[in-house]
Length: 303
Ligand code: PAF
Image (cartoon, rainbow, N blue to C red; front, top):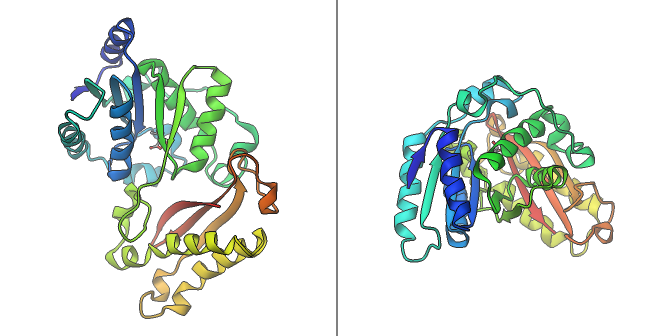
């Protein structure tokens, strides 16, 4: 693995790779890597000749200053994890070059804070979009910049941020870059909790009950066989909101789940569906955001 901090150096490495007709995979991250990120990097290493992993906490996608300040920055540990993965995959990976791109904010945005704004219509008008104004535009700005610098053939994103994938798909349609978007399945802890850099902010007691989110969603998927969309939605929200009443020993009032939303949407358009039959070619997906212990957790279930 080679660490690169300068945009020009990345561009040069990529230009050389392109000249040799090598295929490039990009894994954009904000660092604080966990097994979920490593699964994306592993897949990219198996499918490309050159892999660029970016580690950059993008300030313009945070609409909450405190969230930006609290975002874990663990660059040395991240580089170690990437290095170990590379060693573990020796002989199995297709890639012969692994570049870890770790720019500063000034390097990413040399002209100062970008002023460009992206709009994606209906896919950003639901769930996370209205709750985090400017977030998806900020994601699009940095992802486009990364596309420009890394010139990838494929870009890898985790399905935990399901709406982000729909937004990147819409971005690619807008800018018409011939990049294959590769959505990758959520990686979960043994107890089912979706891996997230936010999990490290949970107290041990909150971490112990957090798997109830996935357990509830899994039960919802079973209920979908015989219940209609509205009933499943209501059941998920009620089950989590009343978890502390039903399980007082496990979950004192101070630790109650506070669901922000649970929407059952068309997996492609992200528009709410009123019946299971109304979902299009990709089916329906349930997307949830829940507060627990002052931490906002998100997860999904495919129906
Ligand atoms: O998903 C993330 O970690 C970020 O939104 C991304 C795609 C790396 C852009 O900063």
